[in-house]
Length: 254
Length: 199
Image 1: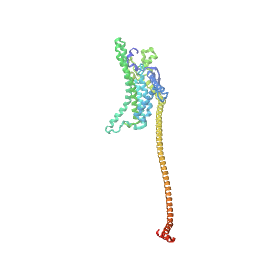
Image 2: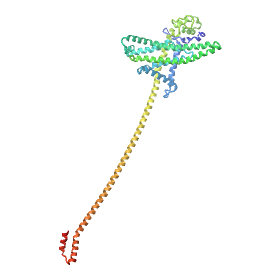
Image 3: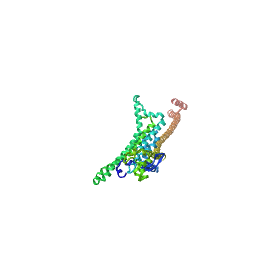
Image 4: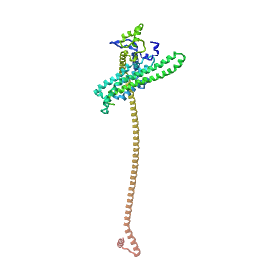
C-alpha cells in the first residue's frame, strides 16, 4: 500500500491500530485517531496550563493568547445565551479548544485530523444537542416544548410552523456535525490532491518540475486557507453551540 | 478494511494474503474486505472504526473537559478577575485622590474667603473705633469750650453787676462834686434820691 497510496488523497483518513484492544466485544483499539485525540488534549491542556502558570497581572504574550481564547468564548456565550448560559461555559470552552486544536494540528503533514471523521463530529454535536434537550427538560419541564411554538404565529399556520421548527431542531445535530466534518475533509482532500500533482509532475523530468510550480503555489495558498477554515469551523461550532444552548436556557425567547 | 491491514501487518506480516480473514477476527465487523485496497469503504464512513473512536473521544474529551473545568478555567477566571479588580481599585484610588485634591482646593478657597472677610471686618472695626474716638475727643473739646464760655459769661455778668452796683455811688460822688462846685454845697440824701430816681 506504499507506492500507489502516495497520491491517494483518501489515505490520510485511514485509521490504523497502534495498540489493539477489545473490551466486551467492542473494538476499542488505540489507533492513530486516538493518538491524535490524546495529543490534541495534551497540547491544548498543556498550552493553557503552562501559559497561565505565571498568573501575571500584566500578561505575557502567550498568557494573552490563553486569556483571549477564554474571553472570546465567554463573550460569545454571554452574547447568545445571556448570563444564565454561563453555566455551560466549561462545555463550550472545551469544545472550542478541542476542535480548534484538532483542526490546526491536522494541518501538519503526516498528522491525522481527528475532526475529519464524521463519528467524532457527530458525537460532539450529539453532546451539544443532548445537553440542550436534557437541560431544557430538566429546567423547564414540558415548557421546553415552547421552543417549537413561536409566539405570535396565527393559529392556522401553527401546525406548519411547529413542523418546520421540529424538523429544524432535528437537523441541528446533523448540520452541526456535517459542517465541521465536510469542511475539514474537503480541505484535506484538496490539499492532498494539489500536493499530489506536485509529486506526480516532478517525477516527469524538467518540464514536469516547471509545471509543478503552479500546484505548489496552490498548495501553499490552500494551506493558508485551511488555517483560516480550521479556526473558522471551530468558531462556527462554538457559536452554534452557544445558540442551541440559548434554546435550552430560554426556550420561549425567539 | 483499513483497520484490518494495519492489524494484520502488526500481528502477522507474512499473512498479508488473507489479512482480511485475520483482521475480521479482531475487528469483528461487517466491513467487506474483498480484493484490493484503495477504498470500497471511505474511511470516515467505516463503522468498524466507530467504537474505538467513540471510546477514545469519550476518554480524551472527558478528561479535557474535567481538566479545563477544574484547573484551567478557575485559574484563567482568577487571573482576569484579579486584573479587573486591580483596575477598578486603581480607578477608585485615582477618584479618591482627585476628590481629596478637590477638597483641599475648596478648603483653601474657603480659608482665603474667610481671611478676606476677617480683614474687612478688622478694617471696618478699626475705622469705626477711630471715628468714635475722634468724635469723643471732639465732644470733650466742645464741652470744655462750652464750660469756659459759660464761666466767662458768668464772670462778665459778675463784673457787670458789680460795675452797675458802683455806678450809683460814683454818680452820687460825681453829682455831689458838681453840685458843690456849682452851688457850693450839696445834700448827700437829696443827691442819693435824685440818682436813684434817674436810674
